[in-house]
Length: 88
Image 1 (spheres, rainbow, N blue to C red):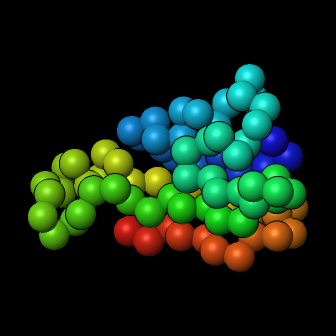
Image 2 (cartoon, rainbow, N blue to C red; image 1 turned 90 degrees about the horizontal axis):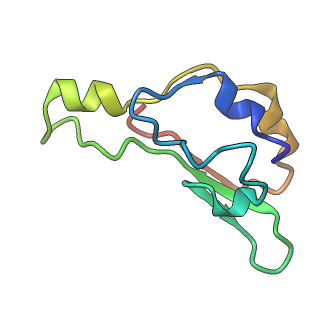
């Protein structure tokens, strides 16, 4: 939950990060977050755009696209080994 601020600086028009809620204290259960089963450390953030720009409409792509800036709270993820923002 220490990196909840990361979401605050993102524009999420399709509400893909709805599970990133302060009420859901286990961030390992948030959409796109992959944790180590033993330590609970966040290893991956997989936030790629689920809509394929080349096969779906421009409108659908834009409605699902995350945008904004990277929040410094991302630096708190000391064990992060993979960050996928492709298609953003």
